[in-house]
Image (tube, rainbow, N blue to C red; front, side, top):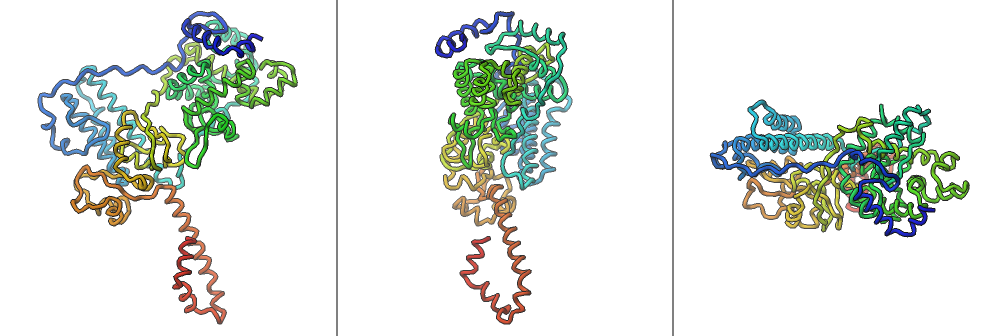
Length: 565
């Protein structure tokens, strides 16, 4: 009755939760201070001090470095950081050579250059001051991550059947249905933890919950738990913000952990999709639309907003968080029927009477086990877990269909990074009106560069930055296109090419290449079939070789054959 009274007065609930959050204790129990939530929020990196001026101006750096290709990310040419400037810029120079080699299809050379860049920074030397060492360490991490992304992307490019970004299997499908006997000493231990745990969501630990705490403490179960807690760092600030805006308990973040392990493109056996595992109809009910190019269920922020509102609606319907979670899994109609059959509006009673689907009966205990372990990290060996850093990005609205490959070229970033920032894109094309996510700080740059490219060409061109010594012929050979195509797309090139020029290259995306290859294969199969049948036809007196040649020379027939291909 108390829960039902609260559901009729939404404002008092929000006020109570706000007071509780400020006081640092639970709405269901008073206890000692809350254990740290795992994984902890990332701490902001300390600000670096202003660089000291060089004894020599930047223009007097070694000629090989001064003539190196311009970099997209790294140390500006005007930067003056003493000996560290030379080291960092030389590492950048080798990394850019590796990137150019990768664009030219020279994979082994690219890897050698990537390794040289990292070897320079990792070589033994006299240590510098704290700020310099921190700067070098950041550069090592930055280059290592970028090299890895380029390497993965180059492997993916070799797999012609991998046209669209991949999906991950939902971890909930891998968690078994448990009925282990529980040691009384272990039960007492968890009860002690609960008495010291503060939570906005009511926490209980009957035997089904204890069984999953055991499962998540070792073997495959522990790996599932740890992987989810690490990936939670990517989306925690966004999810916490939305749960707070919707007036919901922060512990509901673990619903996404159980559902998807925080993989935005997770798919279950039942074809539920996304971080919050919406089926198509339920997603549409909460505004998650699907088109041939996008699926809002895969967008972490939109899906989180929809999930929060759905959970809030379920709580208002059932007046109990455990029943709301069960309804999130099985559907509100299923839970309502179970309550009607038994007369009990209590999850554990429904669980005991076996009136819920087997998956749903285990679903709520799984989430509660994850919450209890995350809130008591020291007791479960999780105190040293490091979360992944939060994902940060700029968003700009795309005015015309635009290739992700073009965006990657313009920003000098791997296309794999853009796919990761835009999981809701089903293809490597961002449709008109889509808000594309790009690395933090690059939104204005991309908007300005796109303005210089005709809207009708943004879907079918890539961008190439001309390097010293490159010619129109060499660029055409690299991309396997005619020189005339480059002239047609870029207009007047009578002035010649200069290093740093941005050249548009008309190349089809991988999906189009695959369709083209399939069409050619089918046409070849049809031609082979016709060729195999010709000897039988040629035996007829009225069919001569000359007749066949005449037919093939008929303009109407030629156009039809071309259309079929």
